[in-house]
Image (spheres, rainbow, N blue to C red):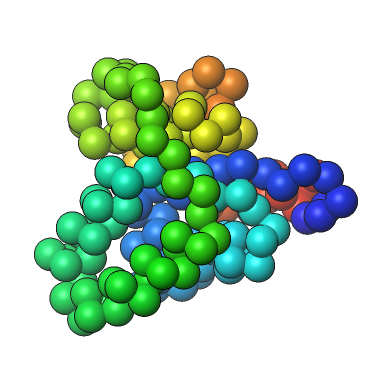
Length: 140
């Protein structure tokens, strides 16, 4: 990735953050780029609340680390408060991802969510899988 240019701005969907924290692989590689200040990750209070909710319900072993996780994310992520409410995707929580990306002027949304991926692009924001995102970074 070319670090001489402006940092790529991206929203990492909750499923990508969960995968990166709990399982590793390409989602963790993306999160590590953010933690190394090589990406500007945008999030919102609603997306972080969703992350907490999913971790506490589905991954109780990770739940005890939520405060530590939040501390890191709040230091490295830019938190925005979307002013525009969207109703583009049928699964209402997915609209919060679009709202954060729009407010944060992102170039990308990285997700594993089929409904978001099917949109492909929203307001010039490319919606891609972790694999596609890493490929795009390598080619720039």
